[in-house]
Length: 241
Length: 249
Image (cartoon, rainbow over all chains, first blue to last red; front, side, top):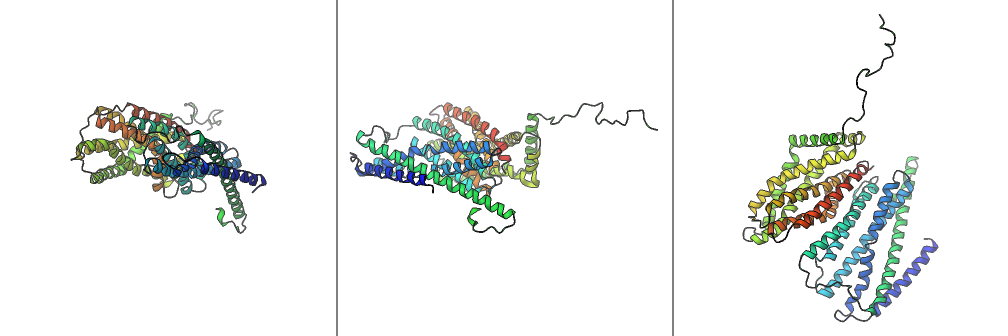
């Protein structure tokens, strides 16, 4: 790991610690008590998980553009698309889990089919299916097929968002109504902002690590193929298929 | 006896119309693909028979979940969802078949080599699948109405608009994703896994539109618009990206 990445990691950890401290010392919420503190983790993960799909879409387009022009850049774009899709699933999973805990604390139920939760679940499903396609497809095709699906998924997200909104606004509003983050107390704002920054930095760090790992795997796979073609015994690269 | 001078300068095709490459128009190519698919289906009747029986089984199995005769209001409320679920699963069985046919004798590779535009192959296949699923609907819908004792309260003629639109929304992306997953491992498993998440807004729209007609509580106009928008957007995406996935390796 290069030195600047270590420095970045140290910086991120410091912000994470400050975020944790702010979240734990924010004033206790009136009705939910300490359980509401999961909100400081839920909100950043939920918001940031909507950023990664855009990165995935851009990387997918970039892959298709470079595919026949510049193989190395195309491979880099593909690695980035994979990393951002995995980060989408990771952050959305955490967002769903913490949201469910929040729902149990605030509404007394683990899950409700309201507009936001349904859209969010659909987003999660889309990118899980993207990762499944990647694991199912033949090695030579993975990049092309998944970049096409990435574009389809990105087109689908706004359509999903709008149609679920129409669906839920047509129906009577759920009894528990109000938005979770509508009008939070100003005393809780520092905790929200610090955690926002911390988890954004952490997400960017994981994205970078995953990208680097995938690039290394690509290089090893290429080296393995070259060694195989030159008739040498490829050793020590079993993992690089 | 040699002919008159100049006769050895043989010009092929002399005196006739000059050769013209690729004389078929786009529509003709689409129609050729469509004709071929319809002829194959006419001879084997695999897809339609399979889909019909499968969807009939789904209707019967779903009738085990609740008693449609005793609860007419409940039947009206959930039948829209049930019939589309049945059709969706049935269509899924046919969509894979429609492409795996092309793998035999490397027909797909011949398609890739052909000078014809590759999106025409997609359009022909999608139209053929649309006709097959529509044929199944024409039989299944009356059976469904009888079995579930349905008395729609809305304007029933609107179903004549909703059913083809919903089918088109399923079949356009279904045909595309079946082609996308064609050369992957266990493609039969993969198709629903990638088709269903992307189709979710379309499924919501077709189910809501059908339910609105059956219960007569609301106008299905909004959902018909959503369906049309979905079809337009994804048809364009499919046409642009089909060549990419056809030549994926």
